[in-house]
Length: 321
Ligand SMILES: Cc1cc2nc3c(=O)[nH]c(=O)nc-3n(C[C@H](O)[C@H](O)[C@H](O)COP(=O)(O)O)c2cc1C
Image (cartoon, rainbow, N blue to C red; front, side, top):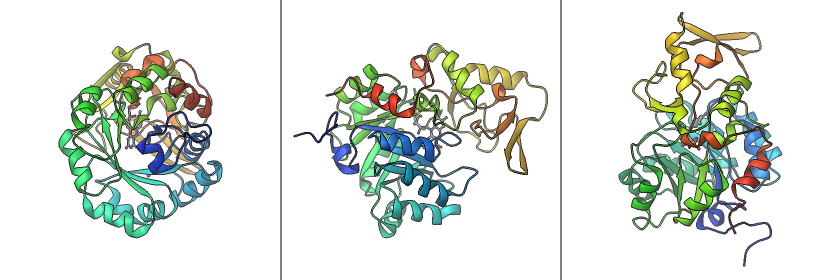
């Protein structure tokens, strides 16, 4: 029997104890406590990102306050988390999920989370081998990211092909990510056997997003996946890491005359943003936002307005159940 308000019970909703088989992606510069808390309160899994201008411990506390007892997690990048293990341990002790991206699944990281608290541990991967390695490392669930995804893209396989190749080869709940921005997308991916979907780009254009308004407007103006491109253009600070952005951002950055496209402003502190810098333009940014890393997935054509995150959650799951 389904719990009240549950659209569809899956191994993922049972594991994380949330209402909908939907995870909002951890997104640097975008997913602060307001977004993660609102998504959690709406019954999906809301995610914070390790990196932000505000202290992580305060963001965790605030997201939990806003979540109404819903499911909140935090995402980490494997290559940088050694510099901030205290945050990882804090997150594992207070949140429902800790998750790692980019590096290969590591049992030592999973063990650290287990020693720190009761959080479920997940890994976002881009290949079948890495998904199987996540199971071997002791993860509780795995997210397979297709090449359609916005932001940094780990693999080179399409989402549906990767999901089909992983399902049946692991007993872990498998979520799928990449280009999912509408109710039909969600229903199709769940129908294909995913235990949940992970959505990034659609949540950038929400009232609770910390993204810069000019970035959000550019997403709303884009009409299809043709407006995005997989590139290594925005590599200052993170070289050789493919990412999907709006094509317009690549053109504007290449045309920009100068070494710095703007500043991140935090109180009295102003940090220059290099041309081709990797950071997502947040509300704390000033300058030529159009020439910054405007991350966007192939589902950007379905991003046609800026809505409260709870409405986006309700819309995305409306084709389930
Ligand atoms: C603006 C933006 C920032 C992102 N930042 C992160 C991040 O900090 N950590 C992470 O694990 N993934 C990040 N991603 C990738 C997401 O985890 C996810 O794979 C992707 O958003 C899914 O594709 P979609 O954007 O088409 O929904 C980001 C994606 C976007 C669009």
